[in-house]
Amino acid sequence: MKELTHSLPIVLVGAGNLATHLGKALKQAGYTIVQVYSRTNESATQLAELLQAEPVTEIDGLTTEAGLYIVALKDAVLPELIPSLLKGREESLWVHTAGSIPMNIWEEHGADRYGVFYPMQTFSKQRDVCFSEIPLFVEARCADDVCLLKEVAGELTNHVYEADSEQRRSLHLAAVFCSNFANHMYALSAGLLEKYNLPFSSMLSLIDETARKVHQLDPRQAQTGPAVRNDVNVMEKHLQMLADEPHLQSLYKALSESIHQMARSSSSEPASRKS
Amino acid sequence: MKELTHSLPIVLVGAGNLATHLGKALKQAGYTIVQVYSRTNESATQLAELLQAEPVTEIDGLTTEAGLYIVALKDAVLPELIPSLLKGREESLWVHTAGSIPMNIWEEHGADRYGVFYPMQTFSKQRDVCFSEIPLFVEARCADDVCLLKEVAGELTNHVYEADSEQRRSLHLAAVFCSNFANHMYALSAGLLEKYNLPFSSMLSLIDETARKVHQLDPRQAQTGPAVRNDVNVMEKHLQMLADEPHLQSLYKALSESIHQMARSSSSEPASRKS
Image (cartoon, rainbow over all chains, first blue to last red; front, side, top):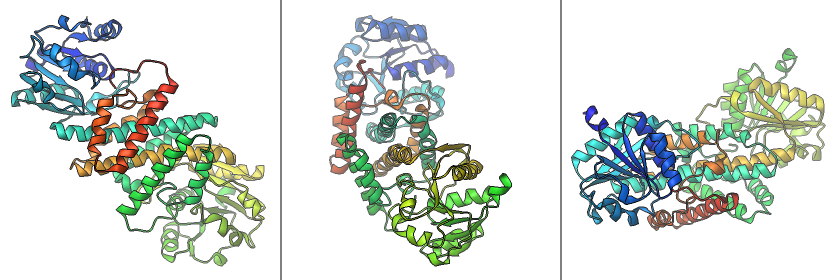
């Protein structure tokens, strides 16, 4: 079986962060990436070189012979590209990597074998990730292809799950809060510290502990700070400090209010005196 | 010198999360906690027992003989309590632990030796923290007391800094974003996953990587997700999914808009195609 999937030639459609990390992980697991497609020559060439693949900038140039086509494009681009991708390659196995796009987008465009290959992680070009720790959610129209995708995924990570399109879009929405929005909190903090001439590194121990904590406690129980203990004095001072940044001020208000509401609705315990 | 600070009897005013963690760390470092004050008998007794100290529920019962009084109370309570705390103990060394309260609150009430002892971390009762990794910011009116506080702090952590009141309140505000607000993002995510019958544990790898990433990248560069790449289709879908939770919907909008604005203002680079 291993022999079988390793001899599966793979085409990567897309050359962004996800395509790059996925391509590198697949290559490292022993797969052959035959082609890398990107609209722009520079992106296609750069990733193709890294993966010892052929760069392709025109969809017509894509082989019809690959065993698996992995499409990692911006969600908005995918639907319009599918018809030309499939043309002459309707019988190949096609997967996309998007959390929010249902599997049946392939069916609508006349594909025969299709599915989804969704690694749930935050990928940045400048940073290597350890793929083996990433949860990877697969889905396919037919059972054989589910097996095949699970096998490929299993070469990359120990955390392979089947998830249908509805579960996947729920996971994706939850991930936006946990990762994209949490990171934006770090970013707003970085901006404030810059203004005060203090180093962002002073926050790292706090950021780490905040993340570690929710391995053990439900995040609703782990909540600390002025909002959850309704420390109006502190919040008023903070709002004054943000007086020249109305945008930050209104986010501070909205988030504190949201924390306070959640604490009130989820618990009838008295607030602790200090957290 | 070590002998000297270790023989310093300490009184803890407060028995909340911070007082508990601080008391345990001080005890472990070899200090004697002579008394623990809390309004409520239960809290005072519980922490005092843990620290082999005397529980005190009336301020009049506080010794006048301690070498250091550490006040870890809710910020709103501190100002009104200071006069009775100081009465007859004006010449002792008093510190509070609050990020947002300036040092001179002590002076206003006629203290002679005073300062601040601010460990910047998120403390929950249910979870032990490794104090040695926590940044601890000290400030005192006179140089000798700065030395003394640095020495005590240095027994608890390797990360001891002097910070004046303005720096400290800036750190505290930045910490609210990095920790309290980031945790609230986890909490909102946990609520969503519960609704969808998916386990919060599925997010842990993503949460960890999001935190690890900013050790290496500026969080503004580390930003990924639909908002930073302005993927309107995905955001529209997410907003539809939140249609029955107007509160979450409006937070989602405000945070996405904020991410988008920050990306536009901080960079003239083209957005990456997939993140």
